[in-house]
Amino acid sequence: MRNIRAVAANTFREAVRDRVLYNLVFFALLMMGAAILVGQISIGIEQDVIVSLGLTATSVIGLFIAVFLGVALVSKEMDKRTLYALLAKPVERWEFLLGKFCGLVMTLAVNTAAMALGLYAALWTVKHPLERADAYILLAVYLILLKLAIIVALALLFSCFTSPFLAILFTAGLYVAGLFASDLRTVHTVKLDPSALAFMRGISYLLPNFQNFDVMSAVVHGEGVSSAFVWSATLYAVLYCVIVLAAAAAVFSRRNLK
Amino acid sequence: MGCAFHFSEHPAVESVDGRRGVENNESMPQAAIEIEHLSKEYPYGFLHLKKKKSLEDLSMRVEDGEVFGFLGPNGAGKSTTIKLLMRLIFPTSGTARILGKSIDDVSMHASLGYLPEQPYFYDYLTAYEVLDYFARFHNLTAADRKARVDAMLKKVGLDTAKKIQLRKYSKGMLQRVGLAQAILHEPQVVVLDEPMSGLDPLGRREVRDIILELRREGRTVLFSTHVLSDAEMLCDRVGVIVGGKLRGVGAPGELVDMKAQGMEILFELPGELPNLPLLAKATRIGDRYRTHFPEAELYPALEQLKTVNARILSVAQIKPTLEEFFMNLVEADRAQASAVDVSGK
Image (tube, rainbow over the protein chains, first blue to last red):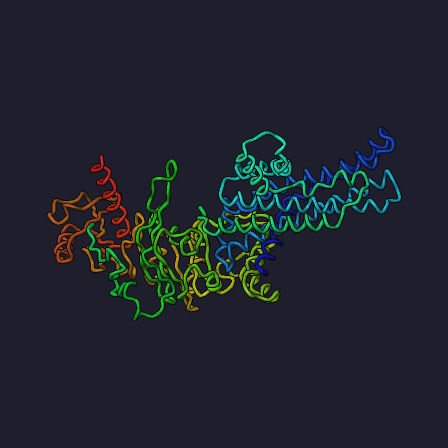
């Protein structure tokens, strides 16, 4: 645990010193601009615009960080050979991977938390006081974070056995495919060969189902999110990350460094 | 200049210093590092179907408390061996043990220090932060960590630059950071890959002093180098590796026949070199002449030089150096490789 904590803390420090959190400035400007603009052009839907814009920006910016930094977690250490001295210490390779994963998820947690604050601040400028239903925004942000954790795990897995470019491509491809994972399960409405249908259904269960984390329309319209939904999404994300990280550890445990 | 080389072709059977090889090591005390038939092949080409041997059936021992130099030209397999020991890469076949434990056992790394070749560390950290980070992987208290990091920075001469980010460090300074992290936790076995690389003469001397200090403390040091003078100066024993094969193991003086190979006289003459039979082979270097011949002909040669009023500047024995031994092996290896090429064609 000590080793994982040390690697995670260093990964977080790297992200901070490499100015990753500067994206928050962009987010803050976006939210300020949106708050001023919607006040002038929209009547009655200011809240909807602010919330959906804020959550989309949180998700997209987080996605960029998760993919690009996730891939760099291992590949950068191998390219720059910073890993050599570390693996000569009493550190298991899986501990290194898990530490890197936790460090980046910690960075994303701080980032999304700061964005949630910015979102509430923008919301407050168009309507105050805030209502009880606005607390669901926090749940939406939490679910975005879970989604990002899965993306980090996938990026980490791909970077363990392929080039950074391909790892980015694979991760982004799986993200897009994961957005439509549920649709693959309902594809029986289309006329297809039964074996092709079974194959697509099988694939749909392997793909990360990002629709499990999508509560944006419910939150934008002030509808609630059930605790069962949040718990099942949490369990799904944890299990998916564990499986992907175990695969990454298995691949990386026999990887020859150059 | 001809040299008589005494080395074992296969040190696993018998090494130059008379020690029995690793195959019969049951009666021997535990070595700090034991390598048994270690080989490494790298796949290359389309679909990785071809294989290049980087290391071939390497067997050797590094005894407890000795400084062992691992010599060889670039690409000989030194770094490959060290990376195999550190489990940065995995062998095609063979095994190795450090302090009696398999290299697969990560806990063994608590007693092991390693300096990678051309070390590179997190450049967003300061030297203090890097050492503190690496110290966290050893079972040290916060106070202990701080004390050790401070002492180590002082030892490698970086105490005044400890708060500067590594991205502003020179190559030599990074090398010092690398050395510091390798010995920070006071390991029993220290493996240094080209520790003198990138250092100025002062830095090289400091590294030499650190290696000697480690020896005084009873630690085992294995270091790779292609600078032979460093090996001659520091090592109890050296192993020479060329083309992925170990070509000799022994004390620097034992690797080559240290018997004098002849005599050399350096002298000055007032005029041109007279036509004397013994001096016919003399070479002119500026105003001076250098000649060499068998030891038995020394006094007649001196007599002849006396008759022509030569001024003797020096008389010295010619002894083969480790460098000559090394170069001879490299050239033999190249000749063998080109012979294989020709016959292959």
